[in-house]
Length: 211
Image (cartoon, rainbow, N blue to C red; front, side, top):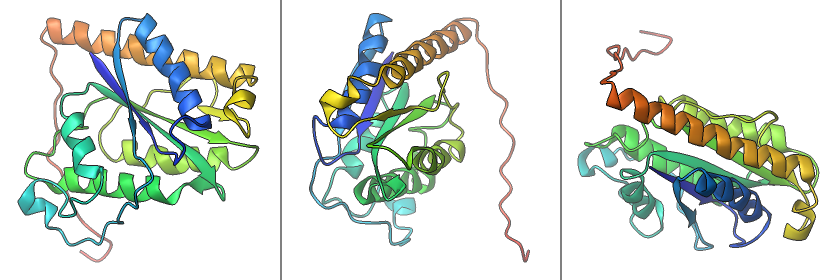
């Protein structure tokens, strides 16, 4: 079993990385393989709703890390998406990244990278805006049929530097419990697979408010 943890911060080893590392450490202790995927600092193009992903099976833009990540996602069993807080929101690069990751996968020919796989989000801030960012990020999972993994508090850490995050005892404990909960859920899924359990799927209806 493998979990990919996405570091959406422009700082490779900053506060968001520190929070994700605490989750990763716990997952590893539980026998779960992990990888931290950094979206880097190169500009990430926003989705332009060209719909070409439906034909290509991947995003039409191939000049950043979006398609690279989705290819890895097919072989992963679960995900943790981490973002710093910018103006009570996820940072712009992370939003563009997630918009295209999830939209291209939901419209592509082989849109199975995330469906039914557990996911979680993690937010990092100096002080405020974490719950708004948490609400924003969790919606990507909720519309993608991903079981959402929580902890005993909202998944957030506080601090202006990695060193300050390491002083956030409750935040770090929340990250560790998130790791335990994710590992438990993955092991439950594995046990279900061994027993041959299957999930019934409802045919999808698609409407808007005028038809």
